[in-house]
Length: 152
Image (cartoon, rainbow, N blue to C red; front, side, top):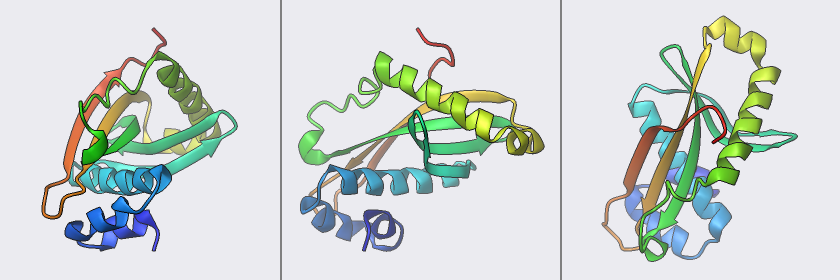
């Protein structure tokens, strides 16, 4: 079972056992699936998951009301979350990369975005901490508008 399927369908108490034996890619997919579930409860509509263009990948592309939202997801396990500075992990170079990918996404999906009435955009960061200890809660931190739409 993939990490994305595990995060969607397995009870949260079973995630630590799966993730303790997996690598960073599996943990990242599990974190993105949990982030997607979280955003859906906040009325975000998921437009694309792990969208790949020639310039790279966007974790989640969503809409919220009339706003196009690009979400960068950072996943940590309790073991690696000594200081939970996932917002710091979205550094200047990463932001520039996300901006380029977002521009490519908008160019490729211009007609669809116009039909949906999505003219404004925002860049969010979302941190998911998955505990390796059974019964401990998953911690999700969301930073709407984590960085501006222009490079700094």
